[in-house]
Image (cartoon, rainbow, N blue to C red; front, side, top):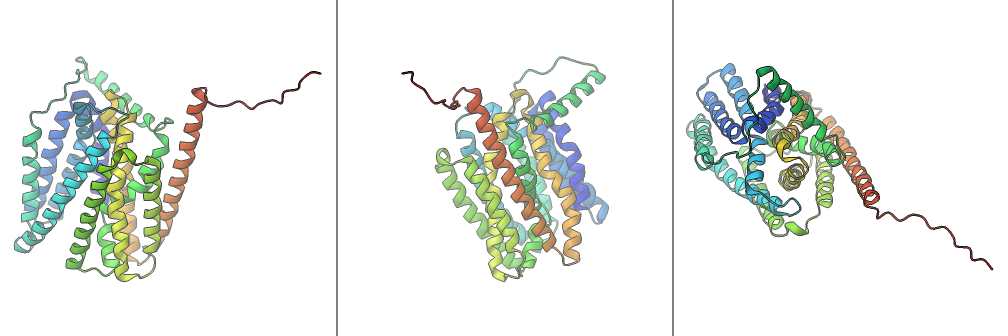
Length: 372
């Protein structure tokens, strides 16, 4: 069910970015919030598998519609300097606020669930509707395309999708593709999917202990994000990305033996790593994609980040059922190692090409022979 629902959302991911660039990022952001709210409410009032599946699918389509369109909308409206660390600082601060709200939701939602399991779903749906209030007046001020026939619009949409994917094959973005797939893809499986509850169970954390673990990890992540916001100008993108990749690969390998309560370190690394790397990846994509293709590019990045979980959901579920989850830990840690190495090689190559193009490269000297 999880794999199918995420696949449905994935199908809507890139076309939604194209629509955002064509008909308005503000419209897609608001529509995404409404569909997400509808998905939660359908699940809240359902009593069988079908309503839950339909609600989850609509929810994922809503998430896909807002994903990319919201970042592109606010990046454009705030008009940040591309070479500054201001966007990174804003995203870090937003992640802090998100975590604080998540902590409150975990505490209140856990209590409400004991009162009535439907209440958390109902209130979550209502909260998405209420989130429209502060952003309702924000408009996408870019010029819209002239009126075209349906066939012409379809051709332009398909061309925009193709251009969005081609952006990630260019030298400026291709080093990040393996990181998006392997590292951020794993974070997606941890944050949104099966991996978090399975790891908590693997380390023998019960429901209450698990909530304490997640809450404390969130508090630590808030502190780290505060430091990132404070020292944003000093942070090096390459150092952060490689450190997160190495830490995540090590955490997967640490999950192989029965380490019991020490599994807290694994949960912490995954939880903090996800929040640490996101501001840098968001900054890279927003800066490197042209203004008219930004929402499409962000949707492609979200597509690449999401697509591993469509296949990982049934794989992780099957391996866990058969008590062979260690195969996933070993295989994915190796994949992350290849992603980090590929990133470093491409970055080194791109830096060398920039030096050559700027004329800074020093030609080898020939020995000077003086005539007698």
